[in-house]
Image 1 (spheres, rainbow, N blue to C red):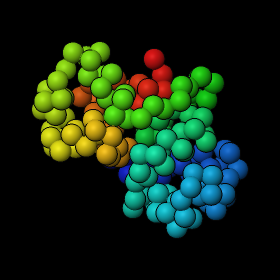
Image 2: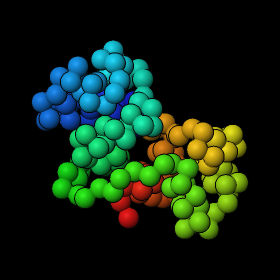
Image 3: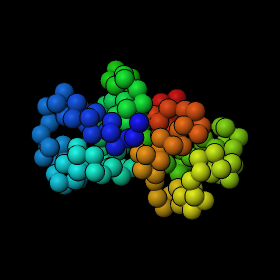
Image 4: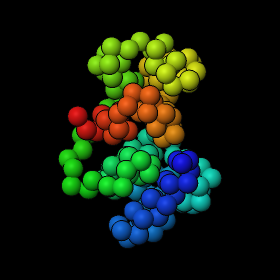
Amino acid sequence: MSILSKLPERLKEELFEKEFSTAEFAEKIGVKRHTVTQYLQGVRLPKFHTFVAMLDLFHSSADFLLGRSENPDYERAYLPTPPFCERLRVILAECNLSQYALQKRTGLSWNNFHFWLNGKRSPSPELLEKIADALDVSVDYLLGRVK
């Protein structure tokens, strides 16, 4: 199932549950209302930092918001999300993997990993899913929100 088919549905659920208008939500996560409308219509994915802001605002699981889990896990104590470059280095060390090995597992470009490891970019939610799948971990774990 495509992330663009589940994320809009889950965002709508969360906005309804938290009783946020589109304008309030946009203000709280630091984007324009039109951008939120595009997320809700499934024509655009949030950037990494916006996605993390959504998770923090909703206090829900990344895996739930992405449609990978049916449990929003509201009661869980989530850790602050570290910079992705730091987290990726920790995970590579934990898994005893090289950048090359992870790049081969995911099929993603070498440039992506180079930019991520150097803190110049962060992956989209869609690519977070792909990396989490390749490592057989949750997106929340990949983000460093859970141990």
